[in-house]
Image (cartoon, rainbow, N blue to C red; front, side, top):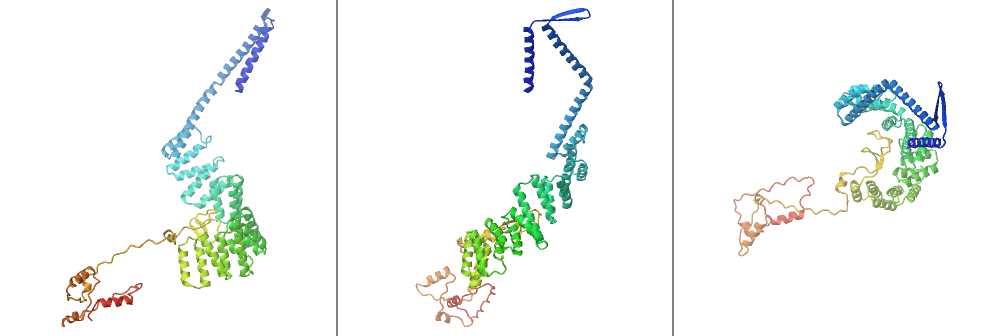
Length: 535
């Protein structure tokens, strides 16, 4: 647009100039070689412009002819380069699609048209084609060749890192990742692998430096960097708590400053302060963490801040925590435990039941069972509470990658991932899935019909055969209707027994199972009046 405006301005200026000359008539006299040439001023100006234009055209033609060899060679060179880049583009697309044959073909074509030192992507395409063909050894050699080129060094390290991961060589993978992280800490894959290596070896200072480098390159957000620093500083404090108390205290206090709501940092910081008799500052740290998120370790350390305190003093400190976070299950459980130690059974029972109403879980029922055992020693109620604890949801714990731990750890024992442990309830038990609600009414149990009793079982029973008019038919009908109905034995029926009749041995009593309650004596007496056996 600016060039168009400049061209129009020049044309406008020339027009104004010629118009100005046309308004002012005059003549120009030129003497050359004995001749005099007299022309008007307007004609002379036009002639000068024409001569200048002609000179410029002639100069352009001469220059074009002089540079024609270079121009022709440049045209073919550009055309060759365009074909090479087209082949390179097609090969990269084929490598991404998994077409190894086409990727290798385009690699050779691009290498003929473009020199590899001019275009490093040819080396990448060559390595990708080798991977697609299954030539991992050749691909590793190509990646190692890239390490000599500063422009391709990170790409070679990335390729060697992935090959080491594929082979399962964690040491080699972390070595390549460490070299890449030293040059470019903004690379996420290199930084994360190096961070896992440093934390796995317990090099907390090196891990902190790497996190600072990630933060400076804005690879991670500020909150995430502060969280990682708090975790690393807490781990450092735990490692130095017995060897260097001052360094551990400094690390723990910095971790607590970065994340006041992080319970492990608050616990280790308060523990170190309590060891140095700074109960006031340690209690403030625990109170701030308790307000953010109550945790049983905080309550345990807070109530036992002074070892010489009486049980009632501990109960009062637990009640102070409860005032800071009301209507929370952990607050009620903390008071209940302290009240149980102080033998304030009514307070302990009330708080434990309140915790169950707020958050029904296993630990509350177990605590209530301990209270019942200490106060009444009623084993029936204790067993009832223990059975409820079995089916209740589990208490929160530190969980990472399926591993449940009673204590917090900075890294996962399975994957080595930093800050993997979370304070949450583990997976539910199978019993909880079946009996999720204890107050749910039981479904009616369908009645099972008893099998018919064999006829041979009545072989030893002598039934009355005398028929009384009007009642014989009814007795027979009743006998057929129910096998348990037996006609009473009279003296007349007993007299009809032949003298040569063989006595019937009593049936052997079946061996009773251990959990068989047996036959009630009253039921046995009733049956004896309905049957007659010969002994």
